[in-house]
Image 1 (tube, rainbow, N blue to C red):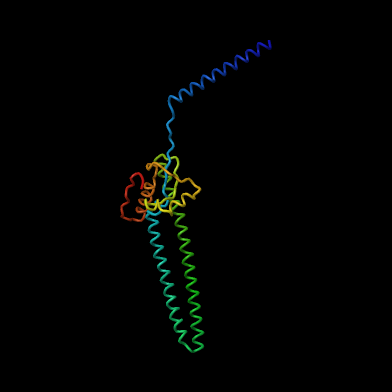
Image 2: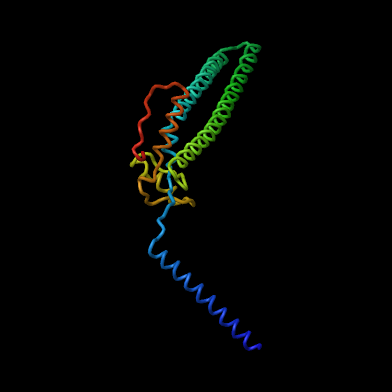
Length: 221
């Protein structure tokens, strides 16, 4: 009886193995006959290109240059006053007048240093805040483009914005030293930098009422 049970179990296991093997062969055959088409879509964004051509950032740079010029003019005025008082000090013989001029010169020097420090502090903070804001806006625009165009992954990279910049030592050396993923070749159709830039500029111009037309992206920049 025990041998019968053992034999029956062996036949059952053999039947299961044959059935499983048949199913696996059928699945493999079906898979070989109808290979699944790849569906992953990857987008690439040249981050410096988008930032450099984003209207909001270009206007911000202009504002920063104007502010920097304003600080420079204030410092120049104080330095000129300091120089005039220095010349006056050299020709003054009155002791009390000399003390007054020396104090004024020192105060002007302190004002110049404080003004320069304030300019650096404010300019650095504004630059950092704007860069964080622009990065978030690029990220959101990339997300919207990916959602509407069925991209599975969008990655950004840093490269020049012209062939001359791309092939310059300043651009090539960092690529060789970088630890991240730097594409050596990509299908131009994957580069959605132009689409993201177009969306950013169109949104910014609509919000600010700017009438400058946004050029339509032709697949990429």
